[in-house]
Image (cartoon, rainbow, N blue to C red; front, top):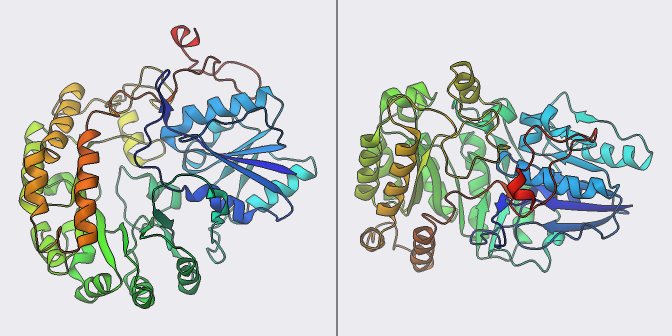
Length: 464
């Protein structure tokens, strides 16, 4: 049996290559490869960095779908299905929107692949592939070590992505993670994580857990096991971790170089309305950030705007706060309602969505606001986010933040990368704006499994 794994890109401008700045190894295809029986021949293609050889013989195609890559995934699926090759789709979007995804694939995997994928392969071999596969319980993460051999020969960044756990217990209204995992959190066995890390020879590890400190006792167990490995790592964590002194000390000792933390808003009422009131339950942001600075932990902080109390002044306040704190990196993003989330459902009830399904609508472009906020126009909010990014990644700001000797310039390794990363972020302030979802050069309309055109076909001008 021949299996082809595909990682779709977000989209592509007509006649232009994909933006390749931040391409890292995608874990989902590597995990599928690890779960596939050893007698199956696997080929992996990353649509972000190489052409897909549609005419190369294969028996089955598997595509991981995220909301931003859904339209492109459906285009790719159509190319294979027109050649008589069946397609299986899974991933976040397939779980959030299984009925939609089922329009473009012979089979849909809803939820996590462990416990399901071997059955999919076996059913296909026996000629009885089902339309939908879904487990009635969360699978164990024991044995969930990806097969990185599929990455051989591909020019990814020298950063290894490693997963130590999945999910997050917090109820943030806008977050698809809590929808996908049902506000659960599970860990991989620590010894398996350590064994995987021993086999990785890259200068930096990115732990992709949505919240690596979600379960503090287990997090501490993991961090203690990391100390002898002498690795450098970055990850994602909740701000409430900053009030656990033992945890902070273990983060620093284990090689943590930086954390991505979602502050989201400086307004307490807005935090409460998004279900993130827990972020300041143990103390203020200023106290939490001071605790992190004492341990020399660099921060990539994210803000999100578009809640009813937000205005242009909210972005000015956040930008000034980020400048004072001299964050290593900061993101000023507008709110995006992902399907299946409480936010999407609320905005849909309130009649505030500007697109029926923004991820499929040809009129939608990356960076557009897909709903009507209360305190500012969509266009004004888009421009304010751009202005905040432009100011934070301006040369004077980069220089001031680089001279933060207590944190940002504490490590020669991270200080050197500070300039590279910040200058790349400066270049990209406008680079992805108005970027299409799906390949503009794709001349064939989206095709459903019953042979009809999709509800949002490619416009006539894109078929020429």
